[in-house]
Length: 431
Ligand code: GLA
Image (tube, rainbow, N blue to C red; front, side, top):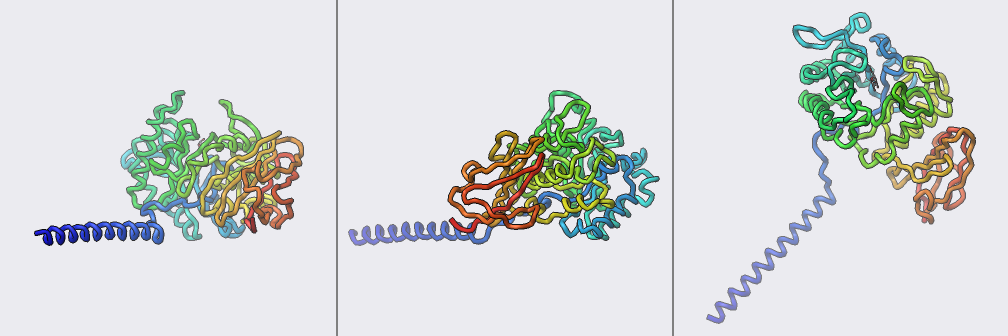
């Protein structure tokens, strides 16, 4: 009997031990799986880096036409824009001719788009580029054209049939458009209505939310199917202007609005401070007075530091050399397109000089010095002040002169003209 009890205890112990070991092995293999073969998220892999392209609004507004779009696509190839990474060609507002009263289908303006939108999308695709269009979540677009409220499914299907790859979706004339209560729920419902039916088409379509920021789209944009969301009102061709009821904002204001939004950005989800005004030189549709070449260069630098979508807004068929040098700088573009997908953030601010930091792949860091002053600024700032490891040694590469620069250890020196932005990529060499 005693022997029997002993045997039973021992075999139970062995069983418990085996179960315990099996559990350990299971845990170990779990760990192995999660460490060695990361699960690739299924589904939406669009806009893994900030979208790059061109939009018709700034240069052409209501004068956009199929001829302009075709010539723009041609210019993407001939000027090297496609090679530099720009690929979406987006027609903004006022392409519409109306909505057919029988079928309920949107149709384009027959004079400016005589071949129809499908043929135009085919042309853009034939150049290896992607095609985008514009609509609005309200009853009319901002340019008073028929919009998608109540027609979401019909419009999404039509866009997919036309071969649309990108939809910019505005917020004018939504039920709460003019009210001051900034109804989050209304905006979420209207954008979800389009986000859901876009997804249901099965066509990969980048969904660009254009609510301008008052209802904090960074909080819900991804959830309703968005890949990018405007953070501000329209940026005009001007350096510094806060919003008032009758005007666009300047480049500086748009940068300021992006502050503290970095935690909402990442692959597939981008804060959008609006389009580039580089190369407009006070021409085209939106005007604003124009910026200096230095200010245009600063817009490019800061948009890239902020991991912003790079949607060009000038007539790329007629770019001057300065515009080309700015837009085609692959070094600054690679900061924007870095696959880590981090939005840069401000780490230093004193006497109109600001420093931004953007973590990059390979433990590299981009550092930008922005001079907001109307006079030059010379400064040496320690690594500590810029929230960098004090004892790290970096090689320092200037992305505008395309050369490594010598810097004192543990600090960076900068000598900036008025409104200039200098950008360095720091690569760790030793500690
Ligand atoms: C709004 C948008 C702009 C542009 C116009 C078109 O103002 O913010 O970017 O799309 O509408 O009407």
